[in-house]
Image (tube, rainbow, N blue to C red; front, side):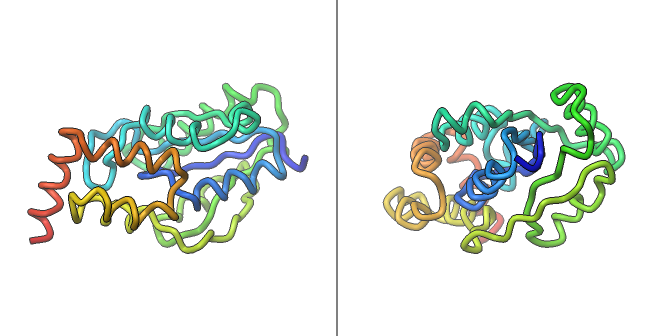
Amino acid sequence: MTYNYLIYIGRFQPFHNGHKHVIEEGLKISNNIIVFCGSSNQSRTLKNPFTYTERRKCILNSFSNAYKNKIDIKSLDDCENDIEWIKNIEKKVQKIIKNTPENSIALLGHKKDNSSYYLKLFKKWKYFEIKNFAEIDATYIRNIIFSTNDKYQIENSIKKLVPPEVLEFILNFLDTKHYLNLQNLYISQNA
């Protein structure tokens, strides 16, 4: 193994096959991945419709037990500024890795767009880039979920984009009050 720990940061709204691919590729070069679910302190919005607990469950359920034991999922709150946010992540990582040398830790990720600027802010760790997998985008998936209440249409549109366990979660989510509230908001903003 190349690294003792890899750190993977994202919102995973929702967790999709591109995210899963990044973790699977990471596990080829490390026995341990620390996944940080960002915006964990935010209430449900169109951009962040799923709670930390829901996302954590979706991520873990998407992997076999052999992989689950190598993935440590932590909540990550948004902060006032990038410096505070980075210090918060480094502190959380230090609690997990204890005496592991910094040079055996790397940041794992994929530079999607301008929102990935934070990957350059971590000076302590090397960065290990994973190429985009099938151009899957969580914003696109969320737009499908909220643009219609036709379960069959949603299922057919996203079933190849998300792990089966996430698809099942999303289909169940469609029957909740949270979904209806967010869908009404989506429709009113896009009318």
